[in-house]
Length: 142
Image (tube, rainbow, N blue to C red; front, top):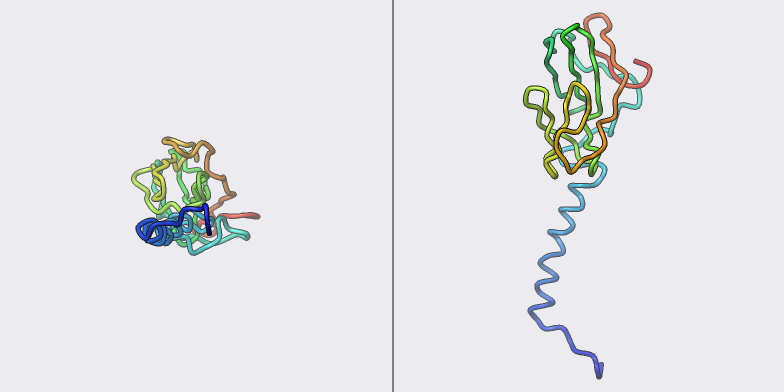
């Protein structure tokens, strides 16, 4: 077209090379997140494991269910969705009672759901949880 500069070969190749990388970054931060195979939160009560798996003052991450459960010193249980509130990535790392999101490094307290380190600013979604017949059950109606 007259009057309009044409793109150089280098510009075209650079754009083509960056397109797949941009697509990967977007898919990692979408609702499913990195490593997220299950739903964001249970839509019905789910059995997570034995109540004895969680020591007082500790927590356990159930990656396949996107749930973290903690036990207070008084023995009470709390459960939270382990989907990061920043970009929807599935949190896959728990050290002590600190959850770390693999996408942007947000950190959360597994005992309260509160944000410990940005970029997330919203706490994790709390879920109903109870111990029934020695098993931990979490989700709506638990």
